[in-house]
Image 1 (cartoon, helix red, strand yellow):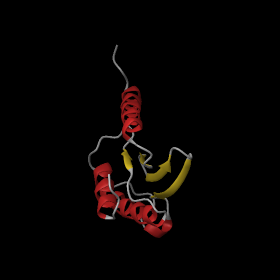
Image 2: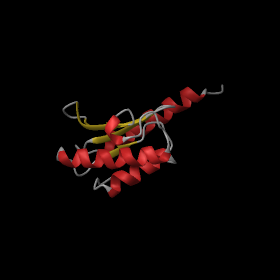
Image 3: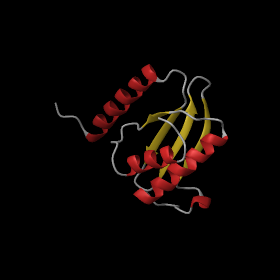
Image 4: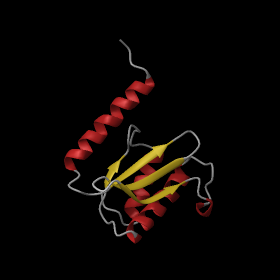
Length: 119
């Protein structure tokens, strides 16, 4: 029985999330979501169930409205690192969801690391 692309994505997402739960040790989760037109990221405290910081390509002040490319991902990664440090977060767990760590997701992660987040 062949799996559809959506089913494969869901399997990957759940596999990554379950591994993160085991190694999190109370650290917030840097969760990434990528659509065909935009990319967004949140720092989530799973213990309290609150979002500590967020950034998205829909924000006008970042100057990447409606763009979903590597340059936009890098700007969003730098913005989330700055906002997370303002919220008092230094270390996070990187939750790529079901997305492969390549291209836009890798650019976002590298920019967040350069901005001061440790993961």
